[in-house]
Image (cartoon, rainbow, N blue to C red; front, side, top):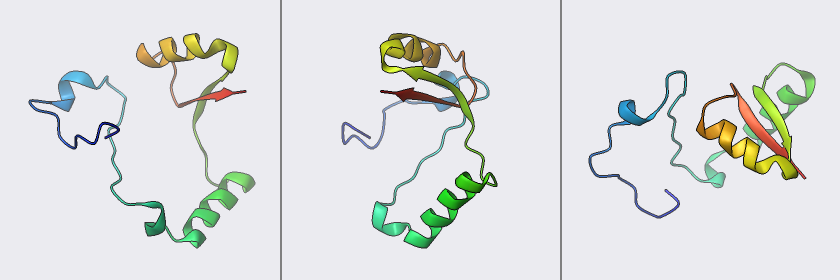
Length: 83
């Protein structure tokens, strides 16, 4: 999507996406998400009712390791890099 190419010729996701990884997409823009929906989610994160699965937190100095872990599917959940 970042290259503005919306399709990939002869792409079969099952051949490339590791087991346990989910493929999702969203085609809307920020204006399509009502502010109240975003606020409800953020409140849920804040009060613990919406869980964001953070697998591991890295510092910016560990960005190479974070990228390696991501490429090799070493971490379940979201990888977070802090500055």
